[in-house]
Image 1 (cartoon, rainbow, N blue to C red):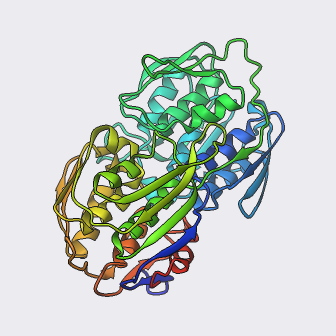
Image 2 (image 1 turned 90 degrees about the horizontal axis):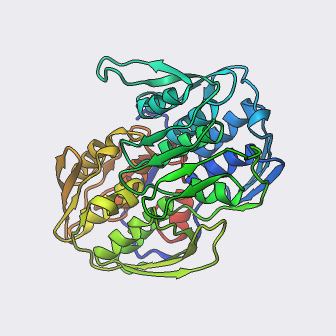
Length: 445
């Protein structure tokens, strides 16, 4: 960590109490901006996430000729439709955002010009073959940087030469909302039906929002396959107002903090509760967390609610299979809960964590060990032996540009015997007000 980098210092805290909100859901915010750009008129979005990843999507769309105004957590996107996108004057900077680059690849696969997409050091290490391969089958030309350590794979910078696309029937190698959404965007621009089958059910924000905007997309009730059939469609998405719920992934760090700091009682309002990604709540409940959920009104078919978490004695559990898939982005936060619980927690079926902003299996194991927690790292996960009431150790968190590792280290620091220091810049990717929110709840930040 460079000596002049701004840092956050966390000390052992007393009870966290109060009511708060978290930034708009990062995944839904990406889609509000991107699908809004493809609408047939202006789209007003409220509750927009203002993290760096969402701003990367907005900047990329502006470079493609879309007028986007953002003020606070509100955005006005003047949709231009697929045909209204224009070639960018230069490469598109996707920052740290895997969602931005992968969804853009799918969108640009159907446009009649070439685009180069790149990102920061972390994004440059993230593999893109799983998106490039099916897009090539549909008729796009996609190439990128090769790496001798991963022969045959494709890494940013990535170049996409769009053109006439044809629908395909495709079995996704992994359950991935990013991959699925990229292929849906390509399929909407193709000739013929595109059918996408996943080995598990990934988050379905794309399907929900596009259906609300009138896209020809359906989910087979029997197989769960996503079917895109643009035949007879006019190619236009309806311009509708979009209300974005609070980000469950961000809220999970507050849930874990409340569950593990003695005497805490925290309420997070307006949290997205989409069942395809609410596994963290189920995992924490299995660990004995005291959680109360009050469902509220839905927005665009997205369930939302008010979540109250009170401190409780946590115990180890197993997070694997479908539960692991539904909590994939919350694993760093759940690892902190496991570190402070009694007994062993087994995390499995999480090989996808190897190719996130960092290798999150390695990063989680490193940070927990730094704090004095025993971790057995495995190819597709890890096993944590909880401290069971003993204080964690403090120290310097090294998130390697991964916002979720940074926040996990900060939350663990609330129960540490010594100071914990975290780089601030790495948190701003998804939760710019993280420190302020913790402080308002009474954390020693």
